[in-house]
Amino acid sequence: MTVSIKENSWLAQVAAQHLKTDNIAMVLNRTIHLHNTTREEFLKNKKWLRHEVAHVKQWQKLGKFRFAILYLLESFNKGYENNKFEIDARKKESDINILDDIYII
Image: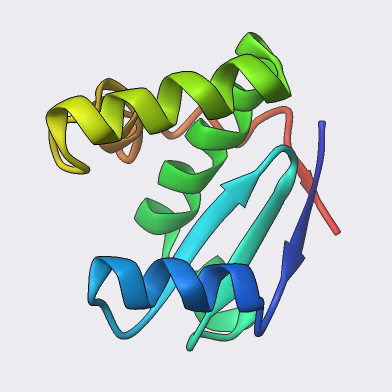
């Protein structure tokens, strides 16, 4: 699967402001949007990369519309930390095989 990275994303900037964090990566479909971090810094951090790739796979499994709605409902009802998609992605941070079928452009 091909995954792209967008640096200096205004969408990621909005998310960072909402979550009150300095830097962030967020996924929309098969694109990882970055704010206040470079592509190189992000790719060097394998734990962070695997976390975001887990979200890419969640998008692909559930479909764009369904994943977006379910993710927002989870966040609204349970909060960011207790969102089941975030819990799953945190578990995948140590999965060394999650990147096997990923090609980053």
